[in-house]
Image (cartoon, rainbow over all chains, first blue to last red; front, side, top):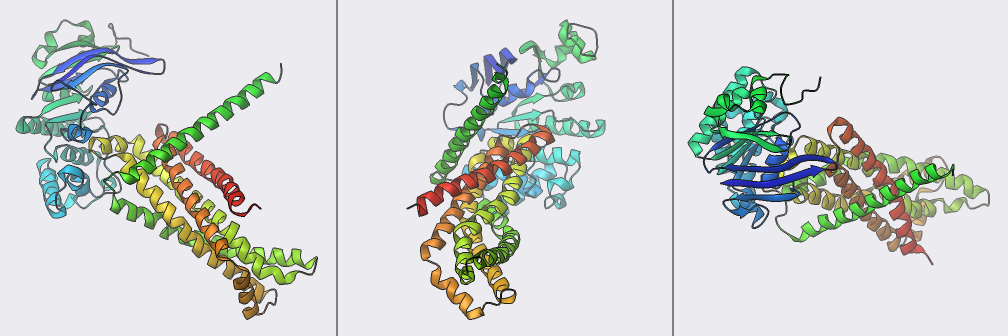
Length: 248
Length: 260
């Protein structure tokens, strides 16, 4: 279980997180929604320790993140980045098997390659993609490779940062279905940030809306349309009028 | 009163420069601290060695070849004013191995390598590849910075050694073909007046310059701003800072090695 309690984070004068409280139960898929620049990525990166909160507490299974063995902590996570964040200098299979070729999870090269090809197959890519470089792939294929990398070491917790941004609706649907299938199949805890409502409905068990640095609403995805929360309603229906100020 | 604003701006610039030097020093110390803590990424080190050392050979070789030739012409013309044309071989040799080989080698590597390291790491930062490394339990300083810094520290002295030889050869070619020196006498004068410490001091300078170039490139890459403009600014700053630091380090090392 991931628990955030009263998390604050500012960048200079800009207060991004202003007391975030959120609990993500083990094995559930939590999707965090909110407008651009509301701090969704900062929240996600705070859990991973890529950003240090100014105050508040973030715990994983009741242990404060940032304490204890960092490598062991990170080994529990997989992450799909918004732009894929594939390493340009490495072929696809080495990107996927990156964690399996170094550190505590190191395997023989042939075995790592075999696992990478299996994971590529799992995300719908053929083995001949393995030896290509990321620059030779389309945006959708890069996302799939990023997804394969995120699941390569079979982590307990997977983070997805804007998994469908920049993709056409069909490819978005494919990625959403893959994420849902993989999370269910692996029994992983998932945390996704997006403002794509189709993704929310496809991926989420639970939804949290971040606005003005706090969690404005949280609840099961089934209750999202009947929440009665004016912020959430404005967001999910994409209305210009409402409590959320739209800059024109 | 009219001077307050420009003086304030100058003070702010100086403070900013001192801050940068402090941050760079801490960055260099952190890089060195990883040298003694596993893991060490041998493959990345080997790749950096090829990129920094082997692929810089042509540009360093061409630079020192032409500089050696020009130096021979200049010393000959200057020496002729007091009938000292015969010093051309020894001055070319000493000038190349003590000063021009290391400084020009360091500057050419700064232009070629500091910029490319800063651009590569800056782009990795902007595209979240550095964050991805962290989430994959890989320390960016160990994986990106240490191999490059170590490779440059070892490769630049080798480049300097090759550059010294090529530079002396440039002087020799000009001396023999244009200035009518006897080939054997030119070589004998070169060897006779050159001392071992002339060569080793240049190689030590090369190692220091290599360390500076890669550390500065990595530092600016890791601290790159967002977007293409941020990466561009990091690249430019890396080349400028590396070049200035090479000149400053060259003066300090020359004082240490050769002051009376």
